[in-house]
Amino acid sequence: MAKIVGLVGVGLIGGSIVLDLKEKGFATKVLVSDLSERNAQKALELRIADEITDLDVLIERSDIIIIATPVNASVKLVSYVLDRVREGQYVMDVGSTKSLLDKEVDGHPRRDQFVATHPMAGTEFSGPEAAFKGLFKDRVAIICNPEKSNPKALNAISELYYHLETRMILMDSNSHDEHVGYVSHLSHAISYALAVAVLDKEKDDTAIFNLAAGGFASTVRLAKSSVDMWLPIFEQNAEHILPILDTYLDKLTEFKTYLEQGDTKNLAGFITEANRIKDKLKK
Image (cartoon, rainbow, N blue to C red; front, side, top):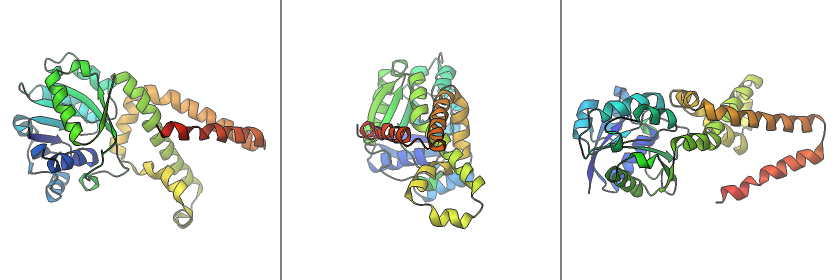
């Protein structure tokens, strides 16, 4: 059954979700609320939004409410929205951290109308202009702590992700933050550090642009990601990012030692060991 979808925060993720939902006929109308008047108006121009409204009106009129704000805002917004929903309305978020959010909403009388989700897709770009159809096709969407959501809420949000053509997996919030810290948050931290290191060492901007080939561009691509989105992710998931960051620094030091010592044998072994990631990424 087609639904009115309310989107709180219009950017790459939320905008891409509702573009697909409208095209697939899941959403008959998309209401948008955003603190940025510029983003809201851009969403109208790009036909991401059918109507711009304030948050309370959006909550009143929507069947499904998608919280697509930076994770520091989502922690408070989910509780605010749950305070105001009626029976039969469902709330979901799309944030990259879950443990703090889970603690915030745990025990809320309408907790079972909320489904914590994380669609594992994105680009380095942000804002409504970055949204596009098909972003989530054949990607993974994580549903966290499904036992805390009622069956009707789970069915509604599962149907939503079905229309995005994603594969859904279930996970508890702590495991989510740990594993996403390894495969996503660490990658962003490394990319930011690499960008700062090169900018600090290479003062000739022309050389960077002229010589930066595919390898550098793909590795540093994530450094273009928004500080407003990523700073609170790092803050909220420091517990899991710091240990894997320590391991990464140990491995980088190991690589540096082999290089300093001209230890070709161990350096080759290190690279060969790293090559095993190819088999993992095929799965």
